[in-house]
Image (cartoon, rainbow over all chains, first blue to last red; front, side, top):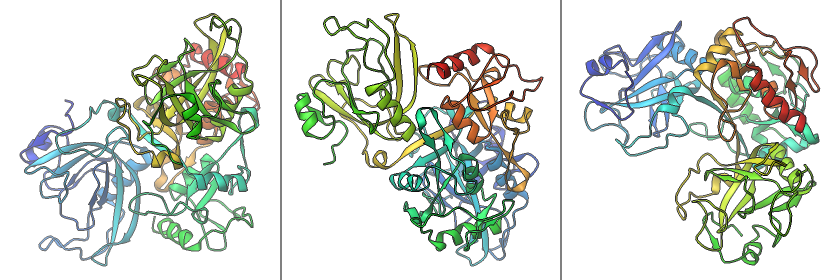
Length: 275
Length: 275
């Protein structure tokens, strides 16, 4: 059965019967073998953020069942690992909003199916409680914009497509010219017809919520698409001496015209080591 | 001066004075050294198509100045080469619609600035006239949807960003599993943390207008991001015996579970050889 985004349900039993989210209590459905299948934004986590089409979701675990307070660190296991696996598989996740979830996108009562989202990133950080929480950035498809409740777009495309979007800013182009479109990791430039070259700009501290890294050359690397994918997924990182950390060896290529701000490298490194 | 998309002008002199499109007659402003700067959709070309956010624009040349009819083949030179260069530089192009341009997005009179678009593809084909024309696919930014005249989104983001969007469909995922996420050109798989792998699906006959290639495994290749960029840009192609054509040598990896439809390869090959 295909459920339309925006559909409302009175209780979790109805949500489960519709095939959207099986468990009646747990916020994350799925396991590390299958990946996550669905989540419920229940309002239980102080670190959740909801921007409609973009949701910053806090993982499970480490909370006192009585008080609901975060009393210890979260681990990348069980439901949290399932969400991480879904990210790497680029698999869609049903998102359901509970009326208790504090957000203008929540229903007045009961539960609403918000549509299918993709985990685009995850990382560990110190939450409001002082304990480590795992946070997941989920994105609806780019056809779906933030809309008032009840007014949703047809979900057809979202059912079939996930996206990798590579943004190219003015600063990015300036940096790529400094390196003549060569990758700072492998030195290769992709040659296109007509004598042009292709490279991608990787923001070290990512653009967009919740990172809000700046679009300045000090925060950008010029990479080939392969190393860009690896860098964005924390498959490798770069230490303050510009040595590669992880499966790649050696040092990145650096131009005297390109000063990397070590604060941004530190931000990326922390996520690399936490993961 | 920043001109808002949707702004109307009485004549080409006003369009030029606003800094949007200098030449008073030519449809394409710019040259092969600088790339194209702007175009006017003037209604002179029978092969133009206008879907609002996506425009299929016919290149210049080969027309009889009296009758306006296409009487010979177009060449990848001058304005046409300038547009091709802009594609490879990922540079924005001002698009202006003339009221003579047959489209529901055209103004009733005069000229309208439609916003900044990016050339995402170009190819040669036999036009309605029977002569070869060069066609360019232009895309507005993804924030801009097809809207009625006069109602446009702020252009701020479009000024600073161009995008590469990688779509991943259900069929794509199925194919990637057949190859265990190894690139069919280089054999490499990108290893992500948690033991997952990453590959991209390249549609041989592209999805979307005007190609409308189907989303079936027979029309998809499993590639690493680097070879995906090269394939989509016709930097190499694949012949019917599955041999690489262009700067890469050898044969692609093929699984007995993956039957490539040679019609689609032929479609890609024609564009490769034409370019």
